Amino acid sequence: MKTRPRAVLLAASTIHFLHDGFSETLYVFLPLWAAEFGLSFSQVGLIRTAYTGGMSAFQIPAGFLAERFGERRILALGTAVTALGFVAAGWAGGFVSLLVLLLCSGLGSGVQHPLSSSIVSKAYEDGNRRTALGTYNFSGDIGKAGVAAAIGVLAGLIGWRTAGAIYGVLGVAAALAIVPLLSRLGAGAAELRGGDADAPAGSWGIRDGRGFTALCGVGMIDNATRTGFLTFLPFILMAKGLSVGGVGLAFALVFAGGATGKFVCGVAADRVGVIRTVVITETATAALILTVVAAPLPIALAVLIPLGIALNGTSSVLYGTVADLVSSERRSRAYGLYYTVSVGASALAPTVWGLVGDASGVPRTLSLIALVVLTTIPLCFVLRPAVAAPARS
Image (cartoon, rainbow, N blue to C red; front, side, top):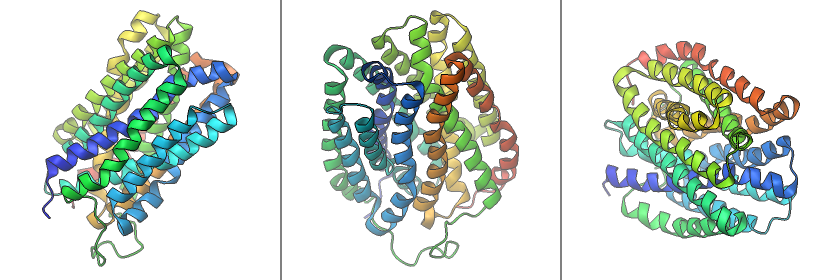
């Protein structure tokens, strides 16, 4: 069956919307859990780490399982596990139960990024891959913005337990639709045995080891600083006088900017280059985080959209570059490897920054996060020779 690229992109984007909605809803719930269960900043960080750590741990297994059973089956199973975890969280009685349930949900959500990215990159093998992946990433931030705002309002009206369970039920319904939908589109089937001569069985299919390593380094720092910043953003905004409902809307602003950034930066990288785009976005991220820390509430809120553009736009550039450095037959596992190290750094970051926050306070912690962002720039110059070489798909 011939694959229909645009329809495949729409399906993958819808799955991305759903999963990123689950992930970013946690940022709205964190201050509510802290207040209800009397959590420290380090415990708040551990909760976020449990979810993101689960995502990281299952990236590589998801890639290998997809080669055997097909991306669509593993995507459906993982989506169901994530959704059921959020339904069950409505009955959580404290810190430990939340930790366990969110770890399980994170494991389920670990399937989404590597497998959806692989499906999209295969559908656009003949061209416009980075733009397509930018569109795919754009959909994720639309999910973040819309779901975070809706859940923030719902949590204020009916409580976080019911609000989270309602979204979980929607996720279960979506999980049931994934396999028949992708089957009709001719996407996400198991790989035929034999494969690519450039990617022998058991290999990762990486064609440029130095470039791939540098790319992973940039991705790790970018993810770790982004997750650290978002974890403590509600605390600094609430300290400036923002309400719980306002926090949900603030995240909607960040994610709306992020959605724009992921689309625009993917296109920009195709036109002006990967390295220039990443240097610009990371420098802007550092400057705007410092603005949020130092400015009064109206100004802090005003910069959240441009901050979202810079904060999340880098990832579209990096995701598209993974496909340029690996063979097509090993793309699921190579994406799994990239997401494992980058999301793994993201998983550890909230706990590390939580310890820093307990010791020195949120404003100093966020200022340090802004400075760490800038360490991506030297790595960009290591990556430059790999992205300057002709694409080898």
